[in-house]
Length: 392
Image (cartoon, rainbow, N blue to C red):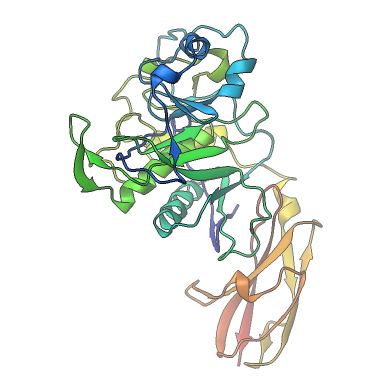
């Protein structure tokens, strides 16, 4: 099944074994009015601390950030969720050979579209988000479909679309790169992902070393934090505790991780500071297994309802009007059209067409092209239907 990131389509998402629980954030001590500030542990309510401790998390270094508590560096626990938790199960040492883990709450049902947006456009984060989205969507046999929504570039997903995950800037302090929230009990993705736009890298003592973070490090952090928003724990979660019944650390079959450090050193979901060595390259093989296990492709008849065909001429004169119609097996959503050359480069992007089922258009350059159309705006993006069109 194809997947979308802006004008691109991707087919897969990665299952990161420990991605969901924590966000590694790095920040310097600058601030600006639009940035979310964090408060120290001294400001954290004693009752909240007790509940967090009961959940099995470490309480050292807990910070308060708006409607959330930041636990163990990059895990966001909402204050509202703590107020509704009763008789929290104490963390337990599961022992034995435990797989990479996910939280108790995951995205529910056939939901596949996860729309990611930012509070304000920033070219640095625009390109980092785009690559993180592409990385997740490139995981095969996984139904999660991330959509990077930015209205000035992608008309089908405008500001009128409610985002699933909102990325916000936040001064998280030196050594803090990012933070993410777990999925909710209702089965939606974690809604908040904080990024630190101010900090440099840090040395072995956790001090700002004056070396700016690279683009690849920003992408690495976003891939990790998105994993948390999808329900993945840290791969090395054991020292953090299970989180009890409110969070959970559930083994994922097929991964050889018992929650100890070093079991999967290549996992993007490992905790700890990003530092200068971790730059994005790829998921580990067990990250992929985890993603595929948690969110396998939906089988027929669900997927088949999002297929359509293209009715229209397969040849025409260059510059002449062409009328094509999308014949769909499902009514609803939008129709996306595009045209590719023989090398699969997009020569007429989605923005060149309308969203209607019937499309009238022209193309001036002779040659053979692929006209494609699909349904979007539904629970998952449909498959591209293709028709070869030759212009003489």
